Length: 398
Picture 1 (cartoon, rainbow, N blue to C red):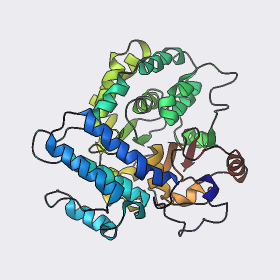
Picture 2: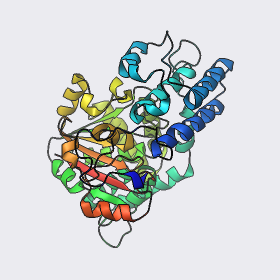
Picture 3: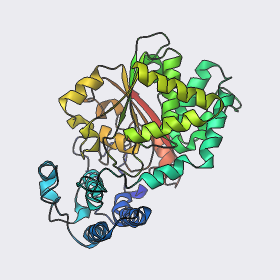
């Protein structure tokens, strides 16, 4: 969709176009038309569901590909909530709804199809658990955790930068964990289109009584570097307290829940060397309260962060800085619209309570806060830089 993006100055205002999947060939259309049907097929085969779940999954497949948006069933506990959230979208093609809403509602309907919220044997069974478990057992995780042994000998400030980049890149964690470079770690990170990390460290000086909130994205090879980063912040005086926010129930395929956070902690603790020591420290930090896991229903809502409820807003405002991980959190933070890519990050995040930092690998069309020269270079490159996962950013608003 790169040839259809707004040039600087065309989409700065609040009326920037809301992204939908209505345009064939667009990234959003591809997700709705190809990725979601493929996911239904994967979920259907991942667990030994019975005829009831198979029929419901088949019906959902037919609806999203050939039908119109239908409401949740009459017995769904949150039926009225979803009716209020998107009444204008029911009875219309999925591709016409805002992309953020359509994606969120698809995952809610997928959970309904497999009886996640229904009394019975499948209640509370994560349909994505087989995929998450497979990733945690991958040999690549062992390689990444072994790299922490080398990083332990690196000076603390250099190690902090490396761990921040590891958290940024997620399953490209080897980039951040690598202690071998021609200069200090982080001097030149390929694919980084914006880097406000210096401002983040200014917000978290050693010895300050800071509280860091981290709103997680994916589990597995992304959440493990997040946990390692929190261990460093707590252990080296950048923060006295950390709060890890996870989803209250399975959401997008890899999104982290409390159960996933525990699984990642256990994976760390089972590892030898520095990784095992980190896992042990984090487990103890949870016991002492210096690390707390929290959740909120809003994290599974199809809404931007400017619409967050008062209790969550109050919690985040009480911290020193909130770190938002991943692409979905970024879309919810700045608004899922075709903004001018050079629109200031501070403007788009002005409603967020307190200082905020976005750590995001680019996997969708939305982006703001780029310098004009960077934007021009990226557009002229001919690469799929917005959605290919090859580029990333660290943006901070103090």
